Image (cartoon, rainbow, N blue to C red; front, top):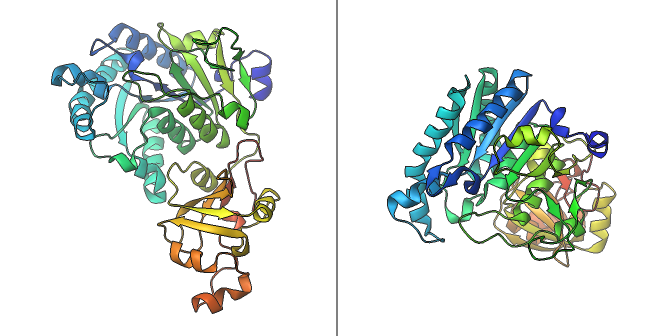
Length: 386
């Protein structure tokens, strides 16, 4: 897709499987669904499906649709209020999508996911299998976060990252984040008239990530920062991602016609499904802090040995995903730890030959084996091949 984007051709034109994320501000106006606009989106989806493209929708809007009904007009709601609003509004949201899609001969399917559904490997595989089956049956899955049961500690918190995880889960070719802005700028164009639009982003460097700002005021829980985090997840899984304007009718057709947006190109390094899951983990259970030598070894494709670990934090068990950070706090990689937190702390800073004496039993020489490790530092190679 890289050459296509540089030639001015939308990667959307070549995608066979796409995820479309739609936020509350686009779908809801004055606590009511924008039915005419939603019908235009459904028409765009029908046109894509007519040429054999699979489409999955990630849709916000449940809480916004219920706020007026329940009298919840404050910008910031308590968790239990948001959960109550989600329970009421999700019915209206699903109904609006069913109405729009069925008018164009399509069948809607609703899925409500939690962060745990994507972080637990078994539940992740089950969700992926369900989505694959729905595609085989010709349905259009409409996905939202299950706010009615998620706790504050185990939430995606925004549908940008949920959409990226879904794109990674189904091996999508393209992820489209519709927004109130036509892409990424070097600065906030609403504040800086010198801000420059970036039509193609080849790699998510630290400089690019620093362009993310705070979430906008209002009901939206997203913002450019969450979109860049979503881009890191999606592109690392081999999926191109776009940020595009969505408020006007037929936003997908407008993109295909060449309307301005920002494309984040898929990482050229392939990943296995298992490594996509590791690298896309949004909530590592702990942190291993490593010295400079260990960091260099990781970049060369090595495993993480206990000798290079300078600190262990968090509560995790053997096999849980953990974040690997340098001593400045910068994240270098994520991986599955071969030891639980207590044992990892005991062997940290010691040679592998000392593990048996320290623990009383012989474990793996590596605290994280290279086969269980994925680099995610934004301006470094993204994969540690086994």
